[in-house]
Each structure stands twice: as C-alpha cells, then as structure tokens.
Length: 439
Image 1 (tube, rainbow, N blue to C red):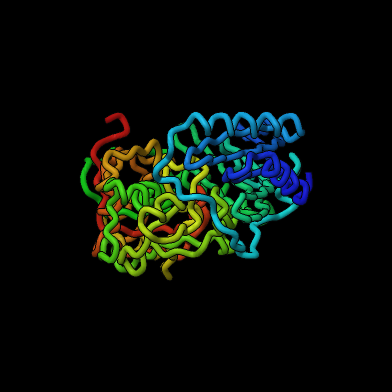
Image 2: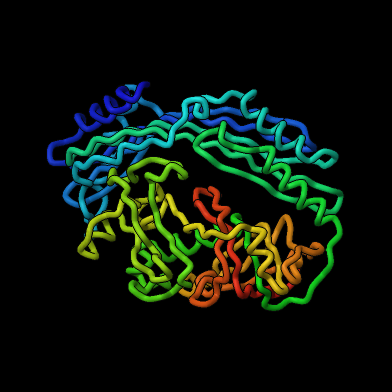
C-alpha cells in the first residue's frame, strides 16, 4: 500500500462504525532487516515486512482496543465487529478523555529511503568496517535497518501520516579475557561511522585484557553516553511521566532545583538528531517540551488522559503501551556541554571511567535508586590519566541523586543517539559501587 492507501484503510474502518461511536485507527507498515555477526563473520540475515491495523472504539465511555495484521475487507469487518462488541461489554471508563482534535503535525520527517529499503549488502558494508577496525580480535554484534509508514485517523477529524527510518550498528570486540563495546544509531544508514565504533570497541577490549579488583565504595566517575542513556530512560519513564506524578510515584517537584545547574533535559521530535514520528499514539502532534532547564524541573509529559485530569493539554506523548503506562517521553535530549571526553577524564583526581551499564533494575521509582552492573570496560583514572582496567562492579545508586545540585562536575560535548536518547558523557562527583559482579 501507498501512503494514500493507508489513509483509505483508515477511512474504510471509520465508515463501518455504528452511529455515535468515537474511534481512532492506526495503520502501520514496517520493513526491517537484521544482519548479525559473530567470530568476525556474518552468520545471519533476516528481513520482515508487516502491516498492522489498530482500532480503538469508545461507546458512551466504554472503550475497547483490538488489532489485525490484514487489510482486506473481510478482515476489517471482523476487526470492527469484534472491537464494537468488546466495547459494549466494558464498564464505563470515568477517565476517558475523548479523541484528539484535528491539528497539524510539524512538517518534518526522520526518513531516508535508502535506509528503509537497505539490503544485506548495505548492512554488510557497515559490519565489515566494524570488524576490520579490530584487526586480530573477535567481533560480534549486529547491524539493523528499519523503515515505517504510518497513517492515523479518528472520528474527531484528525488525519495524519508520516514516515521514519532507523539504522544501528552495535557490537563488541573481544580478547580471550575482555571485551569492548561500540555502537551508533541514526535515521540514515549512511551516517553511521561503523569503523570508528569498531576502533573504539577494539581499544577498550585491548586496554581491558588484564583487570584488577578494587574495593567497593563511592568513586568519582566519568560515565560514557551508553550509561547516561540508561539513566535518562529510568528518569523519564518513572519521573517525567505525568501518570507517575499523579499517582505520587515520581520524584518530580515542578519548579524546584532538583538537578545540578549544568543539567538541561528536553524533548524535541523535530530535532534532526533524533528519530521517530511527529505525532503520538493518540494522534496528538508532538511539541518541544522542557523537563529540566538549568537544573530546575520545569515540565512533565502528558497524554490525553493525564492532561484532562490536570486541566491542561496533551504534550503529544501518549505511549503505544497504552493508558496503563502513561505518557512516554520519546525524543529526549540531555543538552551537551563544551568539554571533550578527554577533558572530562583529565579533571578526575581518582575515579573510574565507565563504558556501559548492564542488567539495571529500579528499586524505588520515588527516589530513583537503581541497581545494576558495569560492562564492557571499566578503567581506573588517577590524576587525569586512564590507567588499568577494573573488574566489573555492582552499583546501587539514585540516578537523580547522582545529578543533584553540586554533583555534576562536567558535561561532555560528545552527544550521540543511544537507545533513542541523545546524550553526552558526564563527569559526576560520586557513584556508589556496592560490590563485584558476583555480589
């Protein structure tokens, strides 16, 4: 189907609904390809193309949702019939906020046709660059590409469509006793510098071939972007989510200086450095939103349900996971500073350089205490110079506490896209390591 064809499917479904029904329809077609490698050889290529149709119906406040992966007339008839029947059986939802009104989305697309339709040869070239950068080491990882087209329509007159693409190279280089990690994500496969990421991973692997144990304790740290993205994910989903705030599960206190003045966090789907669509799961256009400005918490993300409860408007952050999750910041940025990674390290008297976090789990959303492990490279830093590698460590640390006023000693200029978030390295005054990887 073409983009026009997607909207035609939406209109056909809306035309099948009973009089008085409220409804929204989302039609999505996605093409994805994955190239995996291990022992420095490609061992798998897979591709998938799928269409999904999702319908939400509200009958006098009784709401039901269903979906199908077919778009023929018979399948659409079944979808409408099943969803309407389910809605009639549901109790009235007292928090139902209705459908998104008609409003234009920003005229921006994070889309590249060559990425969306990339073949195995295109991904293999990225893999080759990553592998060749670690001459003599064993490489493993993947390169994937995705392209999606989506159309949205509802009974309130909202009509939107859009396209997005994404490409990722992610991998490790290994010695017999160590590994180093590297990776990049972009809307354009051609923008990935897989060779540079392979070089970074190989250097960490070689530097970490011999490790020493250190005593647990609070250490000054430089956290590279992979670690910072992990932090931002927990802070956003459990903190800036208006549902968590309304249910008193969030750390957020609007208007208070909860972060160091060096910290600014915002969401902007129009920024060319990010990826994704320009409207949310409810058809509300995404708009730029500040969460933290100069350390002061200034905003939270709303969907229609939380916005109605607060007497405000949706910020365009309704999640595909539904109302039970709440609002999901999707295009987050932690603003970069003007300090290079080398300069951040150079300012450390005695501490640790941490490449990556692994197996992180939140213990208390209210205080943002998270436990997890380091992974793929931890190095001792003394008098501003990187020394020997350290065995992986377990930590138990409040993510918000680590970014509190006076705790951020430097913000890097090396921002990059990690797990959908654009983040730099950070130099922090203290991080609570509680033991080795085994306990």
